[in-house]
Length: 361
Image 1 (spheres, rainbow, N blue to C red):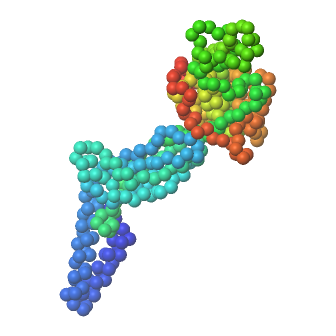
Image 2 (image 1 turned 60 degrees about the horizontal axis):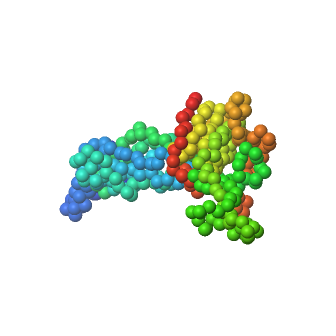
Image 3 (image 1 turned 30 degrees about the horizontal axis):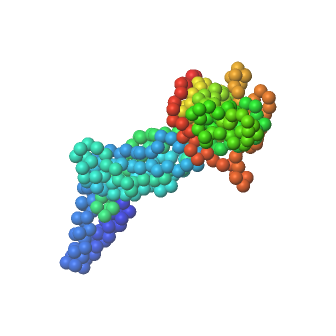
């Protein structure tokens, strides 16, 4: 416990006035000195008797590079009090609004053993670099009456937020890479497969009138579709070298692109292998593996098994298959020269999960 600058100023003023009272008479000066001393005493007692309150930090577990998330402090107390909260912010993160000063705690929080939830005790956290980023420890400074005294509590509460790499939309030319298919409808949709003769019960909306007009003496022709339930499995190898962030972003973009197109996707990195799968859980697992991607080279065996290999090549990031190699810039979608970010990389065309997602060291 210690006095604040304001508290020291009040104490110094009271001491000076007390000295003047001894020399010039106490009557009028004591009217100022007495309230000042009482205020100091109350502030010191308030702060000295305050127990360490429970503090809970609430922040998202994951996010994407360049995203800004809110971090909220919830403080439990038997009655509201003024507090200043600060938080440790690790590399790759930028905080805005720290330290945050607010009246925290709720009257019923301590009574029922829960933690209060003051909406005003929050700050903004910008996610600047991929990977596991650390937040904490927490420092809480409680103030007494009129801010004359304060005490500080420390909480060794370390949390992490997993920052996924940037993910971009792709627009690969049809002849870019044999191993990278052009965008196609998602799994479960119908694909045109040709024409056949009309049969009783066929919908008139499926009649191909233009083709039927060329054969007036024969049966009408209708469109025929094949239902695509599974597009197969593609494997993406990731070999970052010295271009970890660029390769992670390119690999994440390709994985999301293939999952959006209805493929099961497996991912090989120098550290881990992710079995093939699809669905939202698999997306998160794949993006998490790429968020944690370190440097290094993909093994020759994994590179041989992969349908596509994303790797760093000097100052560039390239994508290769068995037949050729292209720069990632050749297949990424752009708008006025800027790469177009994928708006919903965690959401697929369908929500069904398929087998896969186990990470094998």
